[in-house]
Image (cartoon, rainbow, N blue to C red; front, side, top):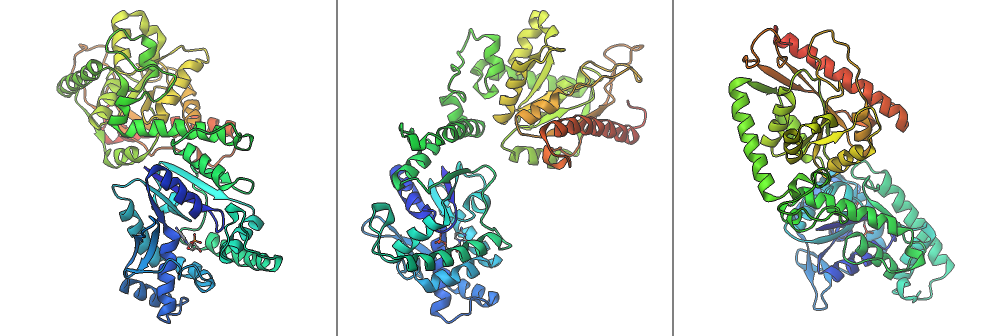
Length: 514
Ligand code: DC
């Protein structure tokens, strides 16, 4: 597990991160200490920190590291020499932002920071650990506090006191004013530099420590990391929701990524794990496909192979230029909503099969009317399809699709609703796909098929070749409009437009297929 804590100077990161690490037995990585150590190397060797090449050359001569003291503390080392105290001087304070703004220096240290965490559980703190160093950290926290409070903590620390313990070492207003000026200056430089500026990661949780004690802050972060539960402290009340949201997300991501965890805990704690037999239809709709009983999962693979072999022989199909797309999709922590034109039963079947071959799950949304056929209902359930009652706002189906996307499963929707069997048939598209994507805060992938349409004059089993094209995924943020409603409408229109454009392009590439 990686817990990434970012925030400005004096927000309490180091102290808090150390305590969280100690509580869980995780390694503690103070990335600021590494920038400080290289700054110290420059100061000791009379290297002008404003000359970036000289700083980089100096950095290459030294080894930055950490060693554990007899008291279990991690001290920064420069070429093996303990420099823990030397890196906390006003001289280093004054130069470190300049050193940290040099892109090559950041490259060198970020690489070392990642190496430090490889294979370990780590609590890392700094300015860019949640945004740049560990963008996939399990827990991201952005610690902040009012500048005056941060300056007070820094001034007390510099005078040898400990603000957290109420020992303020006799600092006066003048010391604090000086600390405040230095801190504002450093904040400004750290947040405005070009490379990896101090910003809050989009998926980080903001914890404002202005009115929180050290213990309270540690408690909140430990709760976010799933280490403890929040006590009934009115001051922590507002963090309850954050903790709940984090827990839900961590559960989901962990379950999507780790087969081990998947088998142990149901992703949604309110859901009973599935049994080997006697599950209800709802169980299949609500659970992750990875949580289906073993026999069902085996059946799924069997169906996958069967469909693959039969269709490749009888109705050969081909996905065009899809490598890059699947690489991209695998790197997303949520699934995507796939939409397509609909001309036969071939395309949903082969699309789901193709995703399965790529190691991904694609859950098709289908009309509830099919459930009248018991066998179909049974099979559709086992292969992860989700029924929707058309013409009503079937909130249950929307939520099921939303949760599937949030877990990393993908959703397949045919907005045309019903197969368009003949060219020129009137098409009324349904925009539910955009709503589902918006609810799950994910995007839409337009795809198109040509060649699968059944020729009604010929025999049903006539060999038909299909070609499926994948368009560039659309994100709500890239539509160029603001506001939920406007974005929804833009997505409905644009994504379908892309499907048809893609279909027309495929027709041009494969003349004679429609
Ligand atoms: O957290 P600190 O005060 O020890 O950090 C020292 C300096 O290093 C600070 O000015 C910002 C910089 N820094 C950085 O740029 N990126 C990090 N990940 C950590 C620190």
